[in-house]
Image 1 (tube, rainbow, N blue to C red):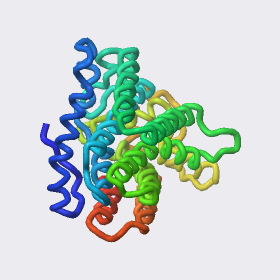
Image 2: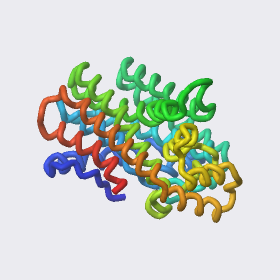
Image 3: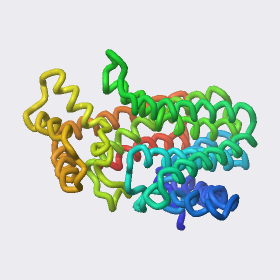
Image 4: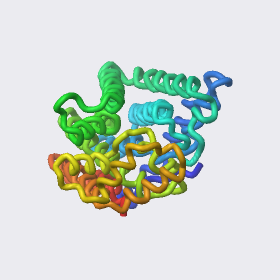
Length: 334
């Protein structure tokens, strides 16, 4: 597989990081195989399907603020991606998602039990890697793992009594997506010797970047096709999971400001979307409603807030690249 990275606006920096990302990819492939021949195929399934590798790239990039990439930074970069892959196995089972990264989801090939246990196995391997990095790294990983679980639980259980749905959803995104991206940014700073204040700054940045990224994905899920995203559009709708565009519809309905087209969409969302035709039709109609543009604007605002967190950092190529990184996650919507 040819390794590529997001354009960061600095050719020299990209050239410096590219071979390091290739090293991460090699280590990642080794980490998902080799322990047991019986489980190598399911364990390597999602890693082999590719992916953006945003989290390890962020770990390598933040390390450039101080001493640069070393063995500890590389180990942390692989561990955060392993953790991310593990969550995907579990998410796809819970969402009954048929595709991931352009390939059949693991549960479609080996069944739910194997997919869940494979996710657990990758969590274990990530934990073994983090254990090499010391007690503080283990604490960060454990706290992140807890937030990943809490985010999924809160999404499954829904808002509590009196809790506003959009705010609840942002909290879910901060836990499910933001927490691991924040840990990736923090590890790069920590293990390159950037210091506690820089690590804290990058943790705040990473969490907001994560929320922006997932809000952008909510829009892309409706506006792109399966060939582009590697996932079936509207899977969340089919499973009754309200992403931001739907939540904005519901908020307008509660406020009495929703138009007739939006009210009709909400009515259809309450019906059976089991057939591909019904799902495709409602995805097409929802993408034409202006709540999608509102969700897009919200993603851009979170990306801008993430960049604002970088203000304490010294000016230079890495700070500029971190700003570009945040922007690119939302520019995918263009």
